[in-house]
Amino acid sequence: QADEQVKAVLFYGEGDSFCAGNDIQDFVSSIGDSDGLQYVIGFLHELAGFEKPVLAAVHGDAVGIGTTMMLHCDMVIAADDLKCQMPFVRLGLIPEAGSTLLVPNMLGHRRAFELLIDGAPFNADQANNYGFVNTVVSKNELVNAARKKAASIASLPQNSVKQSKRLLKKDYLEQLHRVIDEEGSRFYESMFSEEARAAFMAFLQKS
Figure 1: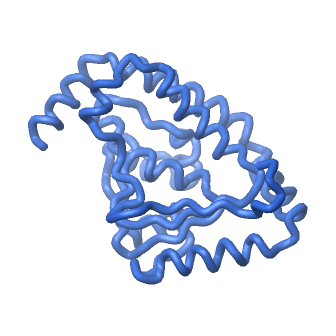
Figure 2: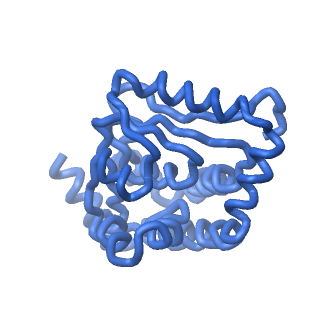
C-alpha cells in the first residue's frame, strides 16, 4: 500500500481457471498446520482493509476462496465461462473470508444458505445477477477489459478514490475483520472433525 506508484491492483489467474480451490490431498497433508491457515487469514484481512482499488479478472473455475475473495474486490470482470462454488460445508468445513457476513447482506438469508450451506454452483450470468461480478465479457476479451478498467480507475484522483472507498466500507469493516477471525478459528477446528475427514476421503476416492 505504501508504494505511491501503485494506484490499483488487478488479480487474474493463469491457465484454465481463476482459482480451482485447495488441492484436497495437500489440504489433508497440511491439517494441523496453523501457520499456513494464519497466513491465509492475514491475506484476507489485508485484502479486506486494502485502501487502494482492487479489481479481479475471473474465468473458468472459481472454487472456495476463488469465489470468496471476489467479495473483497472493488470491481470484478468475469469471463462467460466462469463457474463459481463455495463447497465448504460439503467438505465438513466452515465458510471463510467474511462470507457469512457479506453474502447474506448481499442476497438475504435464503440465497446465502443455498450458496454457502448447500454449496450450489453458479455461472457467470448468475454471479452477475447476484452482485459477485460487475460485468461479463467473452474469455478472449477478459484480460484486456480488466486492464482497461483498472487503468481507468487508476487515472482518477487517488486521494478521492481512497477516501471514498473508506467511507463505503467504514460501517462494517470492523465487524468484517471480527467475522474473518471467527470463521478462521471455526474453520481450523472443523479441519479435525470426523465430518471433514470423511468428506475428504470420499472426495479423494471419487477423484
